[in-house]
Every structure is written in structure tokens, then in C-alpha cells.
Image (cartoon, rainbow, N blue to C red; front, side, top):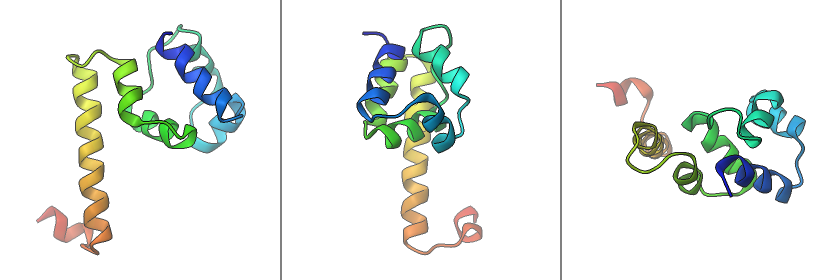
Length: 102
């Protein structure tokens, strides 16, 4: 099963249609349809994270299916996820943005 087929199966398992996903994550339904049909490249890591959350799937699994581990896209996706995790921890600790920048 290729990435697009896997993404479609996750969406269908979540009982969502393309318009539901468009409203929830801000991704055009036409683009998502093309990704699911293998006519477009996988979405960027920011949208993969949103899709993983919406579908109840693992972000890392989606990254692994979207790009081989040694590609720059996979590296960027993993680093983006780690930065977001650090940012969330800082926000949970109540550290204001300006203090994080210093």
C-alpha cells in the first residue's frame, strides 16, 4: 500500500470525507484527493501532524510512509516534530515567547 492509499484508509477508518478533512486541517480537499490517488507528493510535515492527530495515527508512521528515512524531507519532518514538542513543553511550563527567544 503506497502513502496515498494508506492516507485514504486512515481517513475512511475515521469515517471522514474529504470536506471534513478540509474543514479540520485547512488542506484543500482537491489536493488531498490527488495525494490519496498518488498524483501529488505528500503534504508538508505541518499538515502531516494535523492529519495524524485527526486520524488518530502516528505522525512518525506517516513520515516513514511519506519519505524514506534518509531523505531531507524525512529529516525536516522529524526535526519539526521535535521543535514542536520542545515548544509545547516550554508553553506548558509557562515560559513566555520572549524569554524563549533570549
